[in-house]
Amino acid sequence: MYPFILERPRDLSAALALGAQAGRTDAPAEYIAGGTDMVQLLQEDVRRPERLVSLAGLLDDGIEFGLQGLRLGAAATMADVAAHPDVVQQFPLISDALLNSASPQVRNQATMGGNLLQRTRCPYFRDVGYEACNKRTPGSGCAALDAENRWHAVLGTSDNCIAVNPSDLAVALVALDATVEVRGAGGERSVPLADFHRLPADTPHIETVLEPGEVISAIMVPANPAARRSHYLKVRDRASFEFAVVSAAAALDMDGDRIRQARVALGGVGTKPWRVPEVEAALAGASLDPAALRQAAALAAEGAQGRGSNDFKIELMQRAIVRAVETAGARA
Ligand SMILES: Cc1cc2nc3c(=O)[nH]c(=O)nc-3n(C[C@H](O)[C@H](O)[C@H](O)COP(=O)(O)OP(=O)(O)OC[C@H]3O[C@@H](n4cnc5c(N)ncnc54)[C@H](O)[C@@H]3O)c2cc1C
Ligand code: SF4
Image (cartoon, rainbow, N blue to C red):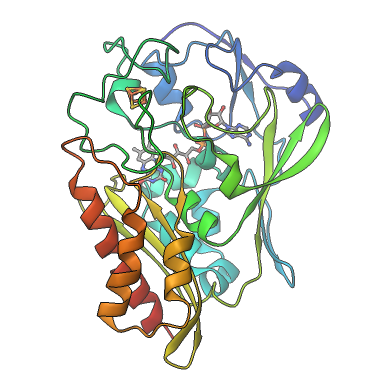
């Protein structure tokens, strides 16, 4: 680990001034919240900031539910959000996604803001022994393209990067039309989560639309009749403490035995949390008949591109959609 100075600013304005460059490749300063991802990146020499700017105690950690929906402070922990009665009852998809993430110890420490900004688990990104990684070192190439890429994306990829966005929470939130509240030196703004993460294209090192130094201050999830009848299905290599191979978030508004409106998003397959509007449109008005679900799910595969050892994900993600929608539909 490279030496760094830990800054503990007194208030958010001071933090924003200190972190003015945070969030860029080789930035001289970086923010740290719960530290569960950042400390790993420091230990592995993937990040080498001169200064770490602690956000501890500076951001809201509240969880509020009202007529407008759910507001999650950026500093709320994964554990507190997953266990909150309003989240469990009104937004089970969010609670499911969080409880299927990491371990109890990590969830006690990790925050909402940090979760949405955690870095990819691409092994070539996390191991500095691999020189070719456009995300870590722009212009160096991509070690994953012609190597073992079982963990990599089939949607939203480019010839410069095929890394998966690893956040389970983000998949649930994008299905529910969440927005991210952002604070920077220039003020506040609100960004739909669907537009928050960027496709890699030819700049995979720029992962979000955050400007240098901006922080996530809160997440808003609008009230929606589909939110209660929802399910997060996570397919992984072992039953716990593992990232998704493929995941599917489904939320349904039912009209008797027919789907009035569906919200579906995928994880483990996209370079960003992947909403599938074409699948949602096909599900509107359909019954929960397996053949109809399978036909709708097949639309998710349009544009999908495997790179060899991840080809299996294209079939698996369709099956995951069917299972997630069936399970959500069976919920009272
Ligand atoms: C062993 C292990 C298993 C895991 N398994 C899963 C899993 O199955 N599913 C899953 O989704 N996640 C998993 N994770 C990832 C975990 O969810 C993240 O590490 C965690 O959510 C990050 O939150 P944090 O507060 O600790 O962020 P930090 O580590 O403090 O920060 C992460 C990044 O976000 C930035 N940051 C943090 N907060 C803000 C903010 N408010 N504004 C701007 N920038 C900010 C930091 O600069 C840093 O770049 C796992 C992690 C570990 C260690
Ligand atoms: S997939 Fe992306 S993160 Fe992984 S090695 Fe290639 S450029 Fe780096």
